[in-house]
Length: 404
Image (cartoon, rainbow, N blue to C red; front, side, top):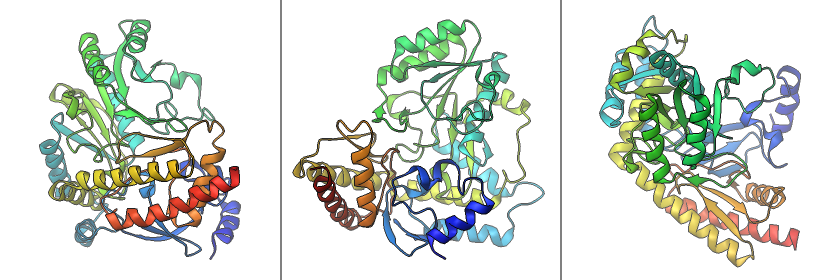
């Protein structure tokens, strides 16, 4: 079954044929919608075309597709049971691993998606403080529930009435947002770095991170780090640990189980009681297989120094792309951590150059994205990156030829 045939069939039974962030209709023209298999740092689409994968399924795959240690752990648990009348012993083991790994974690709760975890975090903060307002950065993505989805279709103004926005990396703006909320601030929620789509990424300024922590303390509010996208690719201990900033609550998902569906909320002892008061649950939230995969993923990242491997591969990719762009006469911006990279073309306001280049990359076997950050995995070897750079070089040449 070809990609085109699958799209035609899907259009009859799925609204729009596809929806959400995986909808290929919103990408460049050549992007496939359906994929059949994956291995390591490669994926094969429904038409049999192979790609070196720099999206890693939009973040969840951190060790490489079908990593043996993770698959073995998942298979062992599946042989015992997955969706049971209560959680398996693996839930306790995984929670213990998170508490042992993350300095700001005294407890853990589990769910399925990053949206679950960020929403739980705000519920805990509100239960603990008795307040309603949440400060969040303008344009930040925290999930797809009505309070945070980028589209307002199907939502009501009341569902966002308690959000007060500030500009990322601006303490002045954050202080102003807090002042406008008065004494009703329950939480400050912030991503570890600015990774808004369609924009160059921006690393957090250490003074901003420390200032956010100090403001939360002064207000008696919870500092929430949304580590859903960046977690386990910057620092296993938490993405702001290197700045000496520890949150009260942290939301995790994506890379947590190398592609198996799971999310977690971790928090400090002071919020344990509030977390106990919530009624938050789901029939599939305590899936033992995903928990076994998460435990194996985190242990493998720890034991193999997987983040360092991603940093090496990401640096090689960044340096190679810079040299190629310069050789072909392009000025590019490469922003964000090297483990979560992105490239934009200077002056490309309508993304026409980026769209053409990314489409050309696809034709040469490299899967990345024109307006969303990419993801490295520990499976990207020096040889894989070198082969990908051959494809990106051809794409630069074709893009230069097209635009003159």
